[in-house]
Length: 298
Image (cartoon, rainbow, N blue to C red):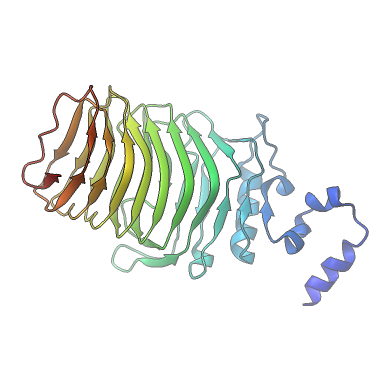
């Protein structure tokens, strides 16, 4: 309370313009605006240190991290760890902005530290609000939410509109250990995968995926009981639309997907009860029967 009174008094008489770019203003605006920490959109200046400073305050104070519209160049990975807000979550406000990684840099890594594969950290309510674009030129990923160690569990996550494009030789986006999520994502790459899901369960996905010469959507390692609505799986030079890598990939339902890749579905394991309901196959599809026992088309 004393801090709030002091800040309010110290900012009395300050112009609205000055207030908008004063770090102390987050006590008034209730958001951590990355430009108030020194990030300069639409320049070649490295915005990563300022963004990370804003992120730490956002997590510590429980306020949204806000990216005013513009293009933010980052020379290092934005390591967004929200362990300190694991119980109440954190919000990232895109506002139509772009995070562009330098050559060879994976722009975004989101995780929740403090756990291990045998005892994952339980994390809740991560929210990507509005539209956020991630532009990468990387041989790795454009964006990672966790990885394949399963040291944290992302519960009740919501992504309004995340657009990940990797123009390098790597993949688009990977989500791991995600449960009860509502996700709209566009994930495209020149490399291996557009979007990979590892141990993702009880979630709803919408959007579009593609990988030139690779696989648009990869399901892996106990990814089950998810619903995919009206996905656009392209381009025509993408090898496979949907790849299920393990037999634990099961009970996933695809409603009205558009499949316009060279091939349709590939299953490396048996799986069970994965369904495509009312799919549309584009003219580029030359084969979509490679789903031995684990897929049903209705």
